[in-house]
Image (cartoon, rainbow, N blue to C red):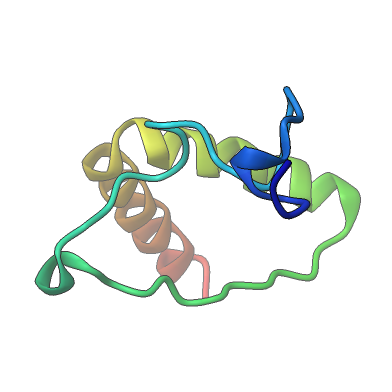
Length: 79
């Protein structure tokens, strides 16, 4: 019987030890970039739109950048 929390303790489902291949892939030090923290305060209806846009950005960043530039040009005309 090993120390509690180690693979040798005999427990079948020991949550302390990760499964091989699980989680984010390991990166080389030169490839590592720390993500900045982003916090948005919005009303519920605004946040629903933001969530939809986030999912679109994850699918195709280039198209979303183009859409934002078109929207920004349209808002300049109304100012």
